[in-house]
Structures are given as C-alpha cells and as structure tokens.
Image (cartoon, rainbow, N blue to C red; front, top):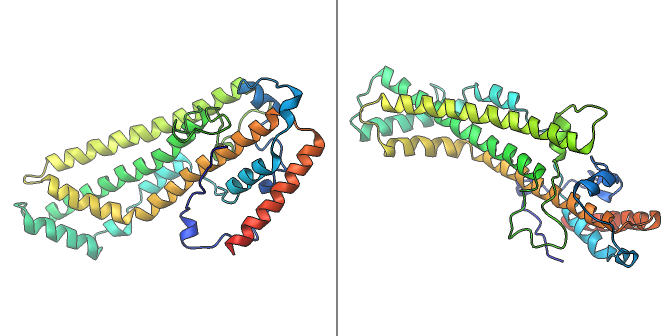
Length: 299
C-alpha cells in the first residue's frame, strides 16, 4: 500500500499535540462520519466483492487511519461574508501611523521621480491597501477552491494518488457541512448538487471581489507618473511579509483537507469489504490503541 506522509502543520511549529484532545472521532467510531456509507459507496460506484476479499489487513489499515487522524481540522472556517467583512478593515501595518510602511514610502519616493506630496503619499498607501486586498482574497480563494476540488474528486493529484484506494471520489469536506444548512430530506445526487451550488456561489463572490480589487489597483497605479514594477515589488513584498502568518494558516487548513479526504477514502475502502460487526469493533479498538501510541510519541 502506498505511503502517506504526515504533514508538518503550522500549529505543530509552535505547540505539541494536545493529548487531551482525544475523542472517539479519532477512533473510527462514527461509521457515517458526515455521510451515509451505504449511499456513499453507491455514489462512488463501488461494486460488491466476493467474500474472500473480506480478508483485509486490519492492522495495516489501522495504522493508516491513525496516522491520518492525529491531525484534525476542527476549527470553524470563515464564511465568505466573514472574509469580505475582514478585508474591509485596514490592517495596522498599512495605517497612516505605521512606521514600517512609512519607511517603504520613503524608499519609493527617494528612488523614483515620483514627487513627494501628502496626496501622493496617500495614493501610495491606497495602492498598498488594494494590494493587500488582492492578496488576502487570493489566499482565501485557494482554501475554497480546495473545498471544491475535494467535492468533485479532483483534490488528489495523479502522482499523489498512487494508492491502494480510490482518490477520485467526490467527498465534501466536513468544514462545508458545518457551514451549510441542507434540507432534512435530500437524496445523494441532490445533496451533491446542493453543495456544488453552495461552493460555486461563494467562489463567484470571491472571483468578483478579486476582479474589483485588481481593477482598482491598476487604476491607481496608472494614475501615478513614474510608477514602476520595482515600486510595486517593494509594496507587494511588504504586504506579503505581513500576511505570511495568514498564508501559513490557510496552507495548514488545505493540508488538513487533503488529510481528511484520505481518511474518508480509506474508510470507504474498508467498508467496501463489508466487514461484520465484530470486525468493525476490532478495527475501532486497533485504531484507538494505535492513536494512543502516536500521542505518546508526540509528548
């Protein structure tokens, strides 16, 4: 069976894994885990197998489940409305009183033919603000596009997908389940369409906002005589440095989407072999035992 490397998460750079955060969701207790397994197997077009295929190497799969379950994504994701609301706030590093940004402006004015005036300084600050908005939207767009790819079976690349279980199944991340209020009575196909419409609407909002900010940025750049790529590089570098923590956090969340996708795909593969209740109970015990071992290693 192919191997899956445990991701180096953003939070692990600052904290050890919290050993008290052990709960039964890590131990393979919830058979459905945000989906009906019977429906999911039908939806993934997985066929019945012969009885002899039930001889699954449970310890090997248990290790895989546990390896994947050590890091989980339990934070409530920002809604698109939250993102838009957040982006309308001017960050401190772009405020009129920010000394580091004043230093960037002074460097721009001292190395170009741009005339120093209060109006020009404010124009350059506005360029910094719209550069920030553009980058901020792009970072969050990457997260939401990962949700889309998971739900359409496109998350795992061909190279990454050389595994002994299917990685092209449409599996919607649990973060999306936490954000939407889907109808009580909904079949599998309609549920997929419901999630697809939800994600597409949010991506459309982010795309439109990105185009708006890029237009405003270009308009302001073109209004300044003597503005150059070098000037824009200085401002972009400054903004990127101040958004580095956010970028790491979003990259961490994207890693966890990949991680959780593998968990769900492995569960589907396990249930494809139609384990009986005893085998399910043994699997739960194996996963819990292995999980405790992995937590001990992290201490």
